[in-house]
Image (cartoon, rainbow, N blue to C red; front, side, top):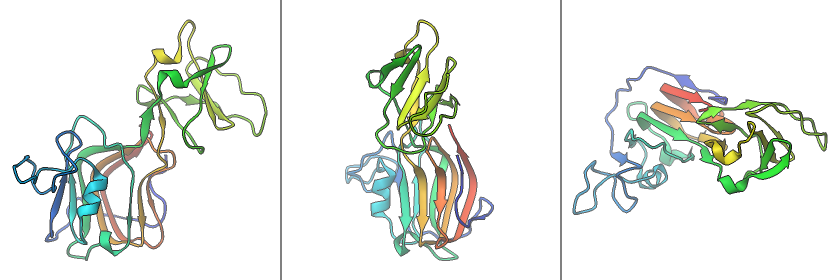
Length: 233
């Protein structure tokens, strides 16, 4: 998975700035009805929000979105576009991951597979595009397919291929797809940056996306990245 697209500037983990507000996010303890101003749930509803999407609706230029590192990945993708998600040299707009994981994959339901041939089963993703198949959260071995209606390449157990918008997966003898923990790259890009300035993203693992972990257009200026891991899974 490509980590970056466009012009990015990588810096150290320390960004000296006076921050306007922190919007706090926990995908385990949060609630999108809360204000995101406190890590603890309070009677006035000032606990953490649950999703990054909600935090983005609450932010203003120069704010920070602070993620709690939990046992669950944040299964979201989002875009930072325009002045609202920009900052100043002394006060960048920040996303602080605290070691959290942003994951674009989704489990494949057992009943989504249909028999194809031999020991091969196939699955139709919800969206067409470049796909990735994971076994136990690790990329499975892919065998390139021919163009058009060419025959499916011969697959060995635990190999997969993509053809005609379908993911084909070869199981081991006497096993079915339901016997494996299979997932696929459901979302295309983790974080998109467009027409923003002075944005800092730090301490975050971005994985399981079809194309990019972070995609930045040329209109994204003064982007600071630190302690990021971009990987398949």
